[in-house]
Length: 203
Image (cartoon, rainbow, N blue to C red; front, side, top):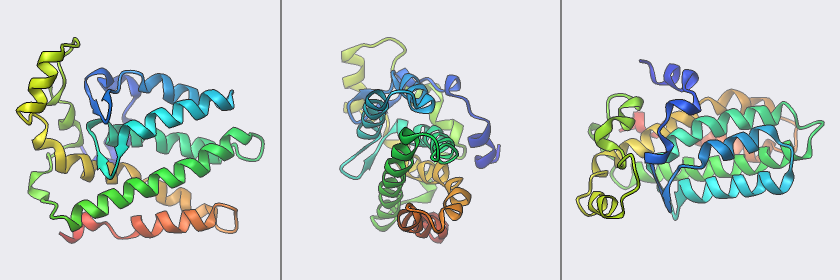
């Protein structure tokens, strides 16, 4: 399936979050955080949900198994926030914070290319990343998880983490172009510049 079509059709329930790596364990609670952010009802809860996800999907320039899938839903939340900024201060908060986080992720992807990204190592399909052989065990088992890390079971996925995270950001472009003459214009222009020329296509 075309990558952008896959991104468009994907639902949160399609992803085995509890079996995906993050900077600090598994992504089990991510659907709950996405829901909290989407509803935009309580600022403290939204800030907590946003902080948890962002700290888990990017750490010191490193992206994770959960990053690309999370970006898909964060972009949808971003669009939802943009559409509600006039009447919801939480939407304004999310739009600004997500813009900054998207730029960080885009920079990580560009850095990966500069550090010798090998496109031949990218899995053929976005959905390949959730094949059984690339997932944590269904039930938590500390010994099995440690074995996965020791044997570099996720090494084959590293290029895909960056490539598909970038692909997941691309739908932002049409949203960013609508932020001209707004308080978010400067941040939007910075991200738009990073997304204007796909670094992976230049490899």
